[in-house]
Image (cartoon, rainbow, N blue to C red; front, side, top):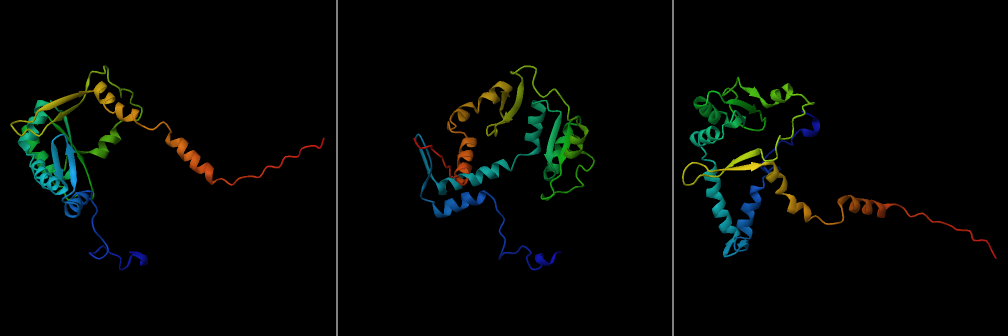
Length: 208
């Protein structure tokens, strides 16, 4: 340990973990009675919004092996990329889908049991096997599927939505069109130009 680090270990006096979840918690506590959502007839305060988000997070965390197995089997998935902390869940799914290839992402900041699925290929190793000169990045047809998304499935198995390449490309277009006419480059250039020192220019005019 360097001398400048001595006595500066993380403790309650100098360290608090940061997460955007804190924004929601604080808003519910400080602005609990203020309006957070106003849409058509729906109107909810920050406290009500927080009270809805908590059970939502709980429901999403309850995604079990059976639900994941259905999605993978229904979507005819051949590869499953997981964070190491979900290795136990993925192992249960792999037992039902023996042909499924699992790629594990090792996150040094996550709490995970490395002994689970210890022999599967790592994400970094997979990238190392690829070629930087790969040419087939674009689809053969713009109507080909680029993603298959599943809803929560509150009334049964999760419902799927197919997103083609064309649709995924056009979806952000309205947001791009709303960009201001003055480009970021022009704004930066103008700001830097205003900081440049002004030079005095002398002009010698001949006498008549």
